Length: 299
Image (cartoon, rainbow, N blue to C red):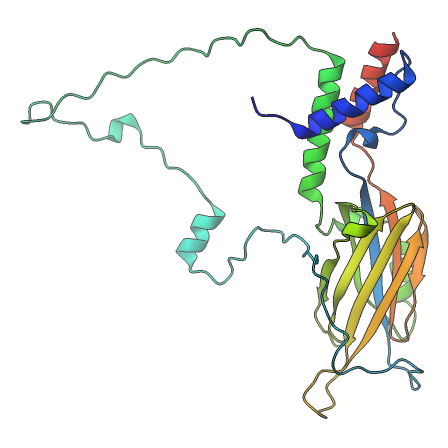
């Protein structure tokens, strides 16, 4: 039997809660049944038009740009890039299928030919036997299954840019875009199991240049200690002035200690970042399964 480690993690949590609370079993936060601490981070990155006096911020030409060893990329919409493949190969990758040949078109062996034998008669398959002993329905089993499904769904959606309908900073993005001299470069939200401070996994960001701003690249990282910590390292490329063939850039490197649902602003002469972090809410199905189990335990 295949072990479900997410279900075992939830079961361990339930045993600990029951031991601590005695007969009055109650879980304050359904997320406690999920392995890891899951958060959604939303960022708005915007650029300012080049000021007449950039101040002390230096325009860099070399050095300064390095990628941390544990950097990871955001997940692509598809597991591979297929745009450059030939049409036949691309069709096979996009639509994998197994063609079934009907019995009417299957070539039959000629039993009269020398050395050939007749094909065996097909064997009728009956329904599989019942598995004994079977587990009776129980609220605890339903809760473990709901927690396991929640874990699978969150894993599937993590490290991806979430749909715009999930954004909570739309009003702030519109306000920034309406200010003369400011251009929103990127507005996105993603979810992930947030690692500890010692195991940071910065996520790569790359936004191509447009008529309003140069190319922006760098990393965004969220870690968890006593508080949440957000770190942004971004490089804004400037137009090449032809001095030495190197692309000049400015660097934003800022970190913030944050609490949930706080809005923080990272400042820079040419770049700005708004960031907010929320806990990922459990699904209604998990909440219902949890409350049903609590009711069954507490009678």
